[in-house]
Length: 161
Image (cartoon, rainbow, N blue to C red; front, side, top):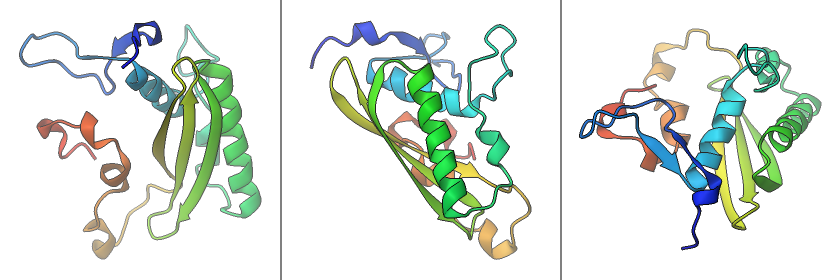
């Protein structure tokens, strides 16, 4: 495997403490790019006072109409935001899938880490409505658990949804 130190090292998201050392857990290599994309999508514009241009405005789509046009606009906005704020990625492809039973749009993000020419992807569940679910729906497996990167979860994270 090529040396990926130039991609950087950062704190693991969500923040976790290594039980063995008592230090904040870190990630490096291609994993930093994936977590950076997730942070960009989860941070609202102007949420960070020091960096008001960091983040995305996808929360503006929370109660959007799920027409083909609106999903296309959402894809375009996510693509522009990621290409502008994450310079380590290239060849970005975004697909959306509407899940009516859960009120969510599943955003499939395929990208290439430009420096290593490594293809990777991220599946991001974007909830349009966090309202109450029926008893039948609440027994279904949460979308986050199904789509979040399994290798990043620890035994303590089983009930993080």
